[in-house]
Image (cartoon, rainbow, N blue to C red):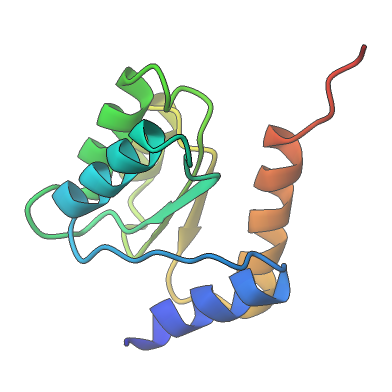
Length: 125
């Protein structure tokens, strides 16, 4: 496991997310997301790198946002891609957060919490 994945797992565990799933490429990630929806156990959050084999993170984001089940799924891009145009492209495609590597566990946790809180605001009755 690489250092960045270990830091992500540490942050998720600290925030009491008990289930973590990993995919080594974007096409596997998309399949996992679709299968979870079909099993009525959808994911709450996607943390994705821009640079992945087979399907880049931006393409995964586009496919997730184009699906009925993924329009509001929390999606964080965690990547070394720091170009302004890349960040803008991700924002236009509906990413909820964008963290540039290297990062700290504290910055990741703060971003995860902000996105999670925004996506899980209790609805007024």
